[in-house]
Image (cartoon, rainbow, N blue to C red):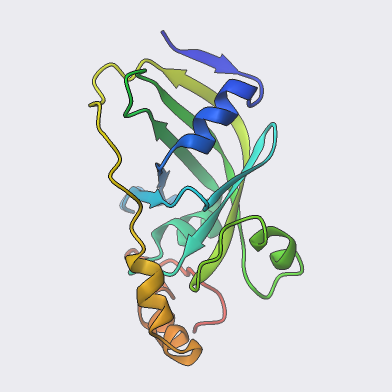
Length: 184
């Protein structure tokens, strides 16, 4: 059944690279804070940096739970599921950090991903546990295609409009934690 790995093997790398969607889970420290699970799509928005580090392009969205939780405590889990005939679930546990456009690292990191008009940050995750499991109950499905609606939404807005949107929607989490810096 399940197996633990010290690092991302070639087989795990292929599994990750072929995943059309993955899920990100984070939580605040506070007991009354909400656990957040977000789907992330776009096969060009995740990059394996090395055997124990991955990064994904965080696009402007209607909420900012993930980056708020990461900024508060760094805990993050990424989950990949196989929807093909070979059932498998892969969880990557670790500590994340957000790299924002004003960071010296931004240019080198953002260039590893596909071109998207609305990047908010790059989330870099240092893995401390890599585990797979069977996925026997995950349904087998066929991918119809990727959606480009978020990119089209961003292309219709000017940079000042996007900044205003982020001030309104991305400055704090639903629990009141600060999310994107420089928006207050």
